[in-house]
Image 1: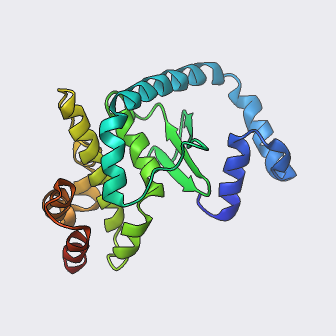
Image 2: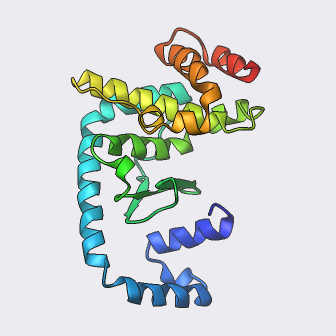
Length: 216
């Protein structure tokens, strides 16, 4: 999914640059599109409705969500020139969303039940934050079981939770609401909720959080 050829193919499709797609791939896609025409109007309508809702929620919360994440990840957000492209599709990968970063391009499923309602903002911020996590991920690379991704989930979820709380809404982050923490990283639950929350609170430095994480 993330090799150079697939990233290029994805970008050509997203930008309607069909002429740059190899002929043999174009034939397969054209045949699939002919079959999909029956379902497209319903799916397109639902995808657009999801996008409108998610964009509205993000606009409401952006001032509370984006600055702290930029601070925590020690990186600036991609954009605004050019803007980060997000394509909303009916069916995505098993996780329901993914991001490529050359350039940053998000693909998210509007039909995924885990992405509905208030959770739409978190999935968008999580995916774009894949473009920010690099420096922290490199410092956590000695943890071979995806600790960097757990940290990404936790920090984005915490930022969204705090933003909703600021507006008087209770929100449980994706990592905990869906049980992903127990399925994928139960060994890191305490580390995330103590050390990385303390980092988000400004109680400890990034160096301290990384050191505690690598030693765990």
